Image 1: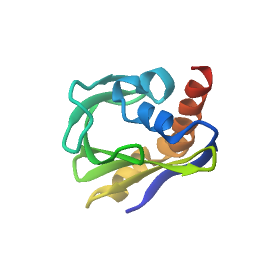
Image 2 (image 1 turned 90 degrees about the vertical axis):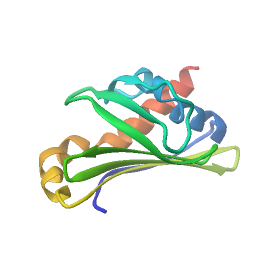
Image 3 (image 1 turned 180 degrees about the vertical axis):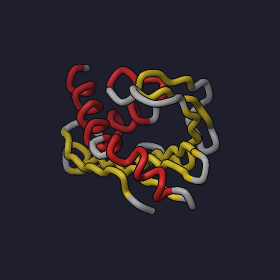
Image 4 (image 1 turned 180 degrees about the horizontal axis):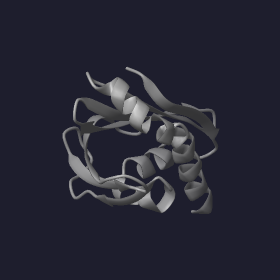
Length: 139
């Protein structure tokens, strides 16, 4: 599965605080500049779905495909012939946490989609983590 973007960072914030922001899709527009709007009314669980409008591009639906409380949150958006996977992980690290984001694309048309949207995702994981940590610092 080709990786479009990945980033890892260490923070003094506890893993529960980091994970709580990631696992609240309705909070994403407040701290991720790549997300303009989210509609999510379900509780966070595997199989839950929502709709997101990115800062650029069309709105898309997403499904939570993996959820491990305080550790891992993965959501997938499907496109014709491909799936865009956003994998968020948090691990305890001393008095804080290490967090990582990996954005991947897979499917028979993934190479075409990568050409079409890949450049726009190059810094997305870094932007996501930076926005999340700035939001936690300001809280």
